[in-house]
Image 1: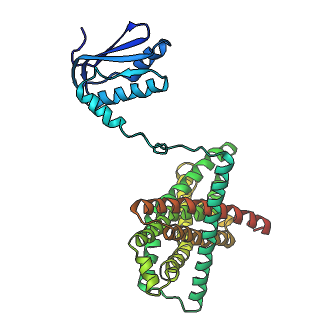
Image 2: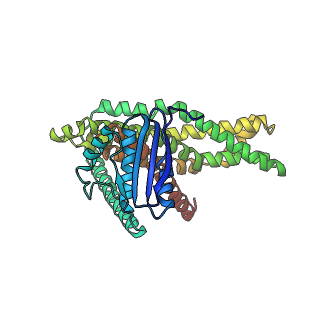
Image 3: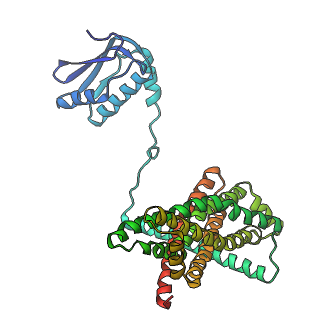
Length: 379
């Protein structure tokens, strides 16, 4: 037995060209409704239908859902040139239908989706990339001018802010740099030990970890850590200042945002990155030593002597050069995205995310270029 509170519909044909829709039950959103697809199938099944009428005597209650259902029927029948008799609908439904159909729909009221061709999308993205590249070059030029002004002693920024940023980029970053660097050295040693043990050459794990950390992984991992930590912080700080209109206030007061905000961050990060890189090198070598002593049965003195014989000051110097470059690029990426931030809280989050992505891309690309350059120079 069907639920009396559930909406029901019955199709019948009083004449060969007339379809009668008998509606029953509760036609409300709370009690659940039938889909329009069943009615559409019934109308489509008979091509001879010229008229559609209703029987609503068994409808117990209704709300706007019934009006919406009838409106869909009217629109579908209008497209198929079928006359609809609304005289047997409830009086309230008829008034609402008259009100809904009294004013014709504007031709441009519905949203139209325009699909662009792949060539148009490519051109639009290329234009966006060109504008972004132009803004980046302009930012780098202004930052360079600010640095030249600093060398001449004419740059204006607060020394207390510079010292605070030095602390944020240096001492406060030691815990995460310690953890990641130690684990990277440990992983390098473990991966190398698995292969070198097959040839009885496990002593060369010290060579692998020492060279890998000093020339490559120490600077790169430190740069990525600072990009995710400090670069995002720079973008969030400057983006928040953009939202609060503090940067506009500085310009009004005659202060250069590049000198007052960007320059101390670039100087602080470029000064702290070599120190953090050296610290990461030492922690990475210690991580490799842990694997060499515990897994490979190497002695501390033996591992230390092998590392000392492998590494030279040039290896550490090449890594320090990379770290300075990475520090400058991370500072540029963070400050650039922060200065480009919009005037909303969501825009600040987008700027911080974009700063991290841009920093990592800059680091990987510059590391590839410097590695090829080192190989060309034979160092």
